[in-house]
Length: 109
Image (cartoon, rainbow, N blue to C red; front, side, top):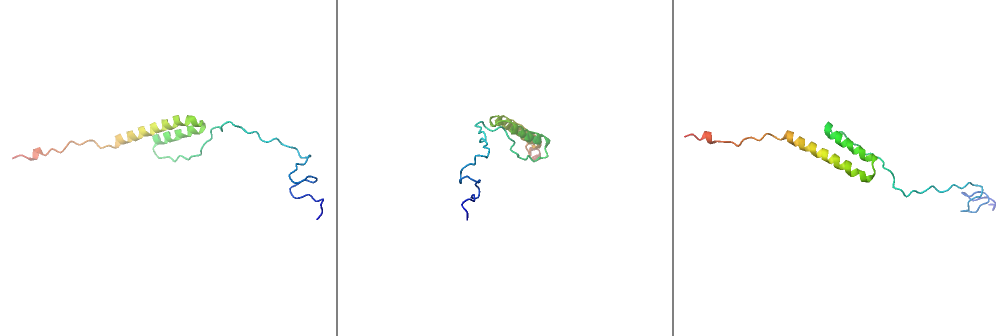
């Protein structure tokens, strides 16, 4: 072995850990202390088959473009709309009330 051979990962004429003088130095990347901007979560919304419900669920995509403190308004709006849809669904599917059975006509003596 020769003492003039540079070690792996070192430039000729530099000691391990030393930065060669002829290599241009790049400044470290700037560190931002600002919060990151809004980014889509990529949550897939599967259609339910009910156009009204699907429209409310699509509204959730609006939160992808808002900062976190704007999400609550979207979530509350979607929740309100879905609750109204469920209430309407319950009202349509409820059977009509039937009068109580009156058996007094059967008791003729």
